Length: 71
Figure 1 (spheres, rainbow, N blue to C red):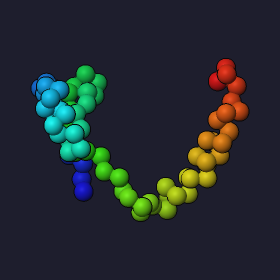
Figure 2 (cartoon, rainbow, N blue to C red; figure 1 turned 90 degrees about the vertical axis):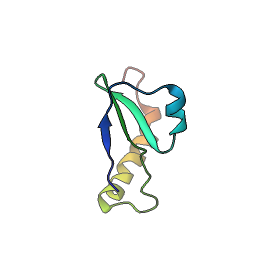
Figure 3 (cartoon, helix red, strand yellow; figure 1 turned 45 degrees about the vertical axis):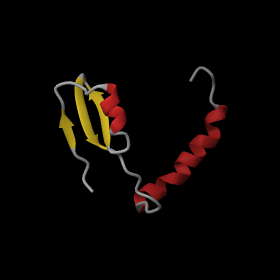
């Protein structure tokens, strides 16, 4: 499924945005109001490239607490 993005003239009222929660994602990009289809999780299926990065992020997560406060 392709993600469709559109530029808006103005963001709609908050009540309208709330009504589309889960279907339309409203945001401002570089000062331009935009809308796109709500991001969908790929579910349990991940590409080999994504799975190959998991050990790196696991290591980073474990070592996060060991970083200096200066970082």
